[in-house]
Image 1 (tube, helix red, strand yellow):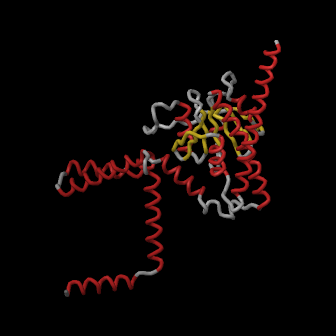
Image 2: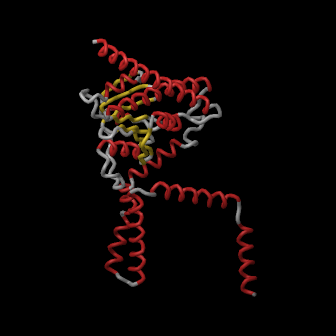
Image 3: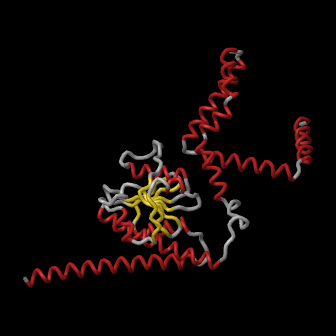
Length: 313
């Protein structure tokens, strides 16, 4: 009983010495550790961290068992460990810094001020671009024409753009379909969309080396995942074999999409959510549905005309 009383007295004395700065300090450290674990989860870094942990356990055992040769080797390895970690974890560190830059702190008004009218105009242009991309992907999917469309967000893709040819054109179904026409000179590479412009085409993307990719997916899908691992871009893929539409984001590939779900996904990824967003989004979906129905009616009209002509003959 006396031991328990002494324990609670010690705890009370410790709690009395805690200040607000100590609590803030612990919360910040816990948040950083959580984010670090979230960053390396399901990546190559997770396996590397397991290897580092095993090295630490081995070093402790070697010290306790007085294995001098092994302790000497591990001690020298740890001296260069920091530099080795910076080299090995370079992609993960770069991604972490980019995520900090894309956070609300990085987007504070001091760095990215704006006006409501300018944002509304930008949203209108982005929706027009999304409509063009969705229509083009639907057409390419029907004809099973492969396509790889990278929609740039906050991470600038200047070094990727340099590998292709500058287009700088207003997006439309016709332009996008012509770029990915199988006899066009730029159809093999990726198309980069910056804001509401088709900025470049024929660009080369980094391939993902993750082993979680299905063997059924080809180079185009691997490039899409690799691009989403190295940036915050949304990457739309149209399969040449099946015509399936997919989206790669943050190293994950989701599919299949139809024009309606594709438009909704691109809206969520490219435009900030506001109170009046549902009405604007439903307007875009209605516009896409109307255009689609109009095209189908025109195609049916041409087919009926051909049948009438053949009957007349």
